[in-house]
Image 1 (cartoon, rainbow, N blue to C red):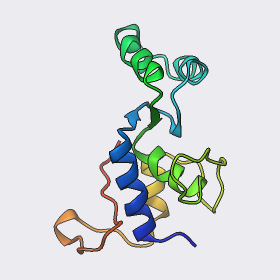
Image 2: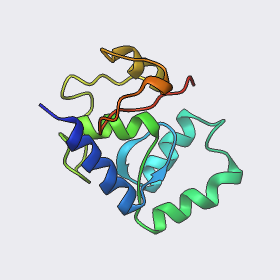
Image 3: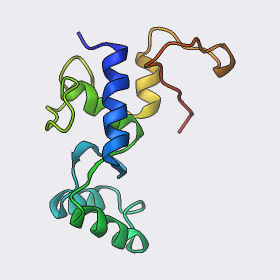
Length: 125
């Protein structure tokens, strides 16, 4: 079973490695193939005005994830940093950020959040 502290460690490694945000991704290397796939899947996000940034990420051999994708990538790679995730494993379904919050056993307002490493903050949308 993965733990909150493993999530913290994973996120710290993501930060140190300077992963980049690509909508609809979950912890994979930035490649031309992935870019073309996501551009076809989400044309309103992967616009021509953003193409140069994506090409730079590919050239720099970055890894990418979106917000909830980083969490899914953590579960789907069993917490192993920069390991190719196995889709929908470890009882973690492929859901949106709004879908992920619905899976949480306990939620509450930000002002009541306890000081426990590994808790996540969510915003609608």
